[in-house]
Image 1 (cartoon, helix red, strand yellow):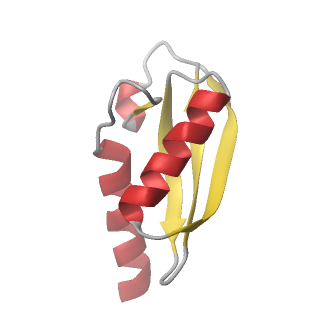
Image 2 (cartoon, rainbow, N blue to C red):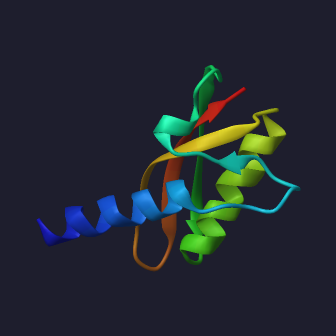
Length: 87
């Protein structure tokens, strides 16, 4: 139970963090407004949560997304995660 709560908190913090202008913007679910979901991206092998978030942002940008919402994040030594991209 504690592990799931930790993952939920991590995913929430990833979803609410901001990025620099070079990448797709991290959005909360309520911020998606007029944007339409355009698929998902996933990454594995990130060193930490900041690295995971950066890698998800880069993949979202490569797909032409203007933003993304983190769906899941986990791992210990190697982080993994998925995000829904929005255009």
